[in-house]
Length: 385
Image (cartoon, rainbow, N blue to C red; front, side, top):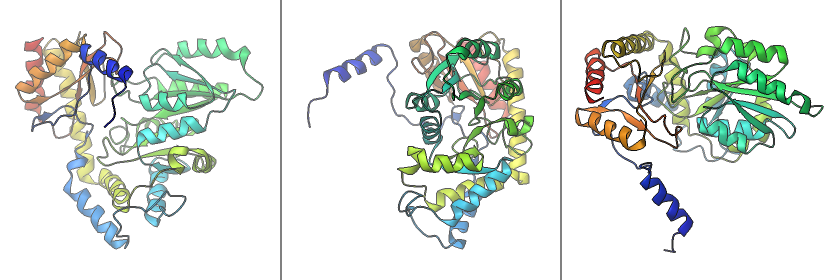
């Protein structure tokens, strides 16, 4: 085995010194306040059984898909699932990607062109930022959830546009680190007035917001003002993959130019069957109950923050994500270890994942967390703080 490059070794040493070195671990049977399995679908036996039955019924008994969708990896269950998703999300069409990261990478590297401009929220997910880096368009960030700052930045660059420039505005409906939301209606109306292309990542709203769990965009009735939406299956839906929602023309363009779609082996039949069955389950009484339980737990958590006097530490959120700010990597790691010792899995979010000074414990709430677990985890946190 060859020598490891010294420059890379120095980077690892620096991250170790900053208490920021990432490592793999197990949850060790702790009470889950860290996973994205908001509705418990990842552990739902009925979804597993129905997906397995669907693969048998479809007579598509393959362990793998055998290739990319444009070669040998397409099959009827893909088309059936995409048609369902387009209807469910009240959009023209849907295109499935292997993950949310792949979807954002493929979209932003393919859609904005040279001479175009992308304005994105400063807290946008790494997958969005990485996709933007691969684009030939210029990009500028605006202050988090700040429409007025977006307007200022758009106006500042208005005189520098090439004649056929397109403007893309990117945000998320629920942000993964803060759990908060922008004023999506105001953003959508501004983009419509200016003829800008509005793009929303609904990863953390999928399954948890909307009448049937379809996210915030349809719930607000602004789906016709959004150029493209992304929904993921690996969080509340409890499985794997993602979908980009938009027009038929958008789908055709991505199929031809999104490299993370074209040059990868597609998902196997059982994965796609699991996606479809998870969405079927979402609309059943059992799925409705799980969404209701999650909302009750969110409200209880918010109330207990007040009761324990922790309001000053928490970022305001109405979602399943609640972050307690504990600056400095070493301190927040110590707090996470204390929570683990009393039985709770609450992960520390360290710099550089978040900005220095905004390190935090991130609590992810679930339909299966009990009221007593929620009360106790916050009482313990308050005692440690």
